[in-house]
Amino acid sequence: MAQPHGRGYWRFPISLLEYPDIVKAIEGEATAVLEKLRSADNKGKVWEEWKRSMKTQLQAVQRKLRHQNEAAIRDAQTALDTAAARYRDTKTTAAQAMFQAALATYRDCVEQTRNYNQDSAFDFQAANAEKSTNGHLDDVSRSLGIDHG
Image (tube, rainbow, N blue to C red; front, side, top):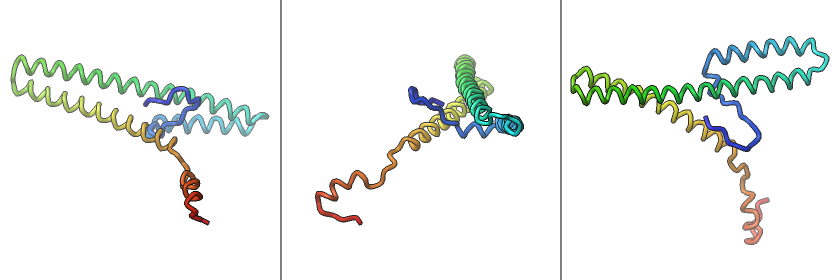
């Protein structure tokens, strides 16, 4: 969930739309601002204030989700450490089953976070990739006498 620092902008992470409560809240806010816009004298000001407010709220939700993911990984790590210690001490089948379950939970948490971070990194790279086509070949083409037109 890392955002590039110093860029001066924030992109809405589409992954937030996977949460039905967030979608419902956005829809509710949109309905409310639509009513305000219909009766407002200065529609531009109402719209800009709403956008600023929504951005702040969504950034806070994004931070909260990131902290929850980090806490889930820490909790899973603690449970895994506890289960591993119990299994080392007792060597029972039940302790081994608890260890395997804790390990699976930890791996799931890490995998979900890794996938999200990779998606975010890909989105950032795709958004900032070079968008030109053959512009960098024009000088070479001209020097070789190749006509593209």
